[in-house]
Amino acid sequence: MSPAWLHAAYRRGIFPWHSDGDPRLWWSPAPRAVILPATFRVPRTIRKELNRTALTFTCNLAFADVMTGCASTHEEQDGSTWIQPEMQQAYSDLHHAGYAISVECWTPEGELCGGFYGVRIGLAFFGESMFSRISNSSKLAFALAAPELFNSGIRIIDCQMRTDHLSRFGLVELPRHEFEQHLRIAVNGPSPTPLPALLLRGLPS
Image (cartoon, rainbow, N blue to C red):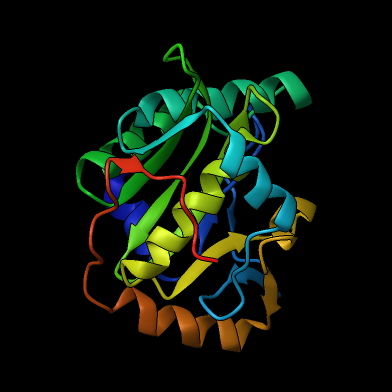
C-alpha cells in the first residue's frame, strides 16, 4: 500500500477495497460509474439547501480528519471499514505529494460535520469516500466542489459504482472500453488548477 503503487493503480482505473481482516483486494468494476462535465447537475433540493445553510465548506484543510470521519462512519454502519490505518497513512502520503484532496464541511461552531476525499491524477478525480454527521452535509460539499473540479480542468469524476445519491448529480455508467478511453486521456493531461481553500456557496444558475 505505497503511494507509488496506489498512483500506478489509479492511473489504470484500479482501486483497493476490502473488509477488515480480509486479504487486500483490487477492483476495476465494469460498467464504471462516472460523472462527466456534460452530465453533471445539482439537484434542485440540494441547490435550495445550499442557499440557506449556515455551514462552511473548505478544501484540503483537514485531510486526515476527513479520512477518520469516513472510516468511523463505515465502521458504525457496517461493523468494519476498509479505511484501515495502513490505508489512511498511504492516502495521507498521497495528499502530501499533491495527489489526494479532501473537501470539508464545518458547523458555525467550527466542528467538522462532513466531507469527502479522493485522488486526483492529471485531469481525473477518483472519489473515494464521504461522510456526514449532519444530514446532507457531504452532498452539499460535493455540489460545491464538483463544479470547481470541472472548472479547474477535470474531465472525469470516477464514482466507481452507482449509488442513489450520486445518481442525482448526473452519474452515468460507461462500458469498460469507453471508461478506459476517457481515463487514458484524463490521467495524461496536465495538472489542474488547485481548488480554493474556501468554497463559496454560490452556484451557476
